[in-house]
Length: 328
Image 1 (cartoon, helix red, strand yellow):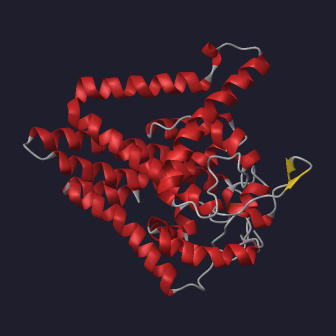
Image 2 (cartoon, rainbow, N blue to C red):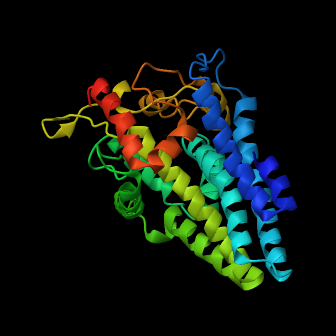
């Protein structure tokens, strides 16, 4: 995907946008026409090759971002429009959001310190480094509860969910980081979140200083679209599913507290993320070993669900009978 979008960007900013959108449209169509095309349970465990695929994406994404920045600056210097720079940012953001953030998520769950550093780098490249705190210390313990800003409530549209989750996740990340620093008796000078945030701001300042408005606009657009894809998928993954509260505490997370989809093609692109119940039940499991569990099933894969969720009446019509069937 980075290679295809990069080649398209070389031809035209609009081609980059069309290529990224084309991936989503094709996946959605395939999932609609072949609903029975599902992935079998993995026959093999984790391996160095599977880990290399994820790590190598850091290099591909760095190259794609560098290319996009240079093309944005050159396009504006040649008399091009800001709209074309925005189209270029959307095209690259389709990669940094769909694969970059997904792979950062996988790297962050690794027990390898190198992998977690790579995850921070990928999330920093889309100006969303606080995900590396909120997701692992916040979302996983609180998923499918009212306390989780990344869990969408029944009847909540995507467009109402987005401002709530953006603000709530940011605030929660800083609260969690402050709590951990107090527990470890450390100052903010030893906070990865604080340093990553400063690095993001310094990077934007450098882009503005050396690349001008075109570079800054390109980077902000690709980051914004990547974050939109992340939070839209968060919306889909737990929509309307809630853990019961027993004696003031939520029940343990179960297979029925996350939506799953097991279309082979989409899972190839996003590292089996659609096997979401197993991921939450076994957060340290590498992506090749995730199982297709018999939890609540989405009507289609993530690519198609993004289109459904964008139109709330249709999304509610499709999903609410499924929520009832899931016992939520």
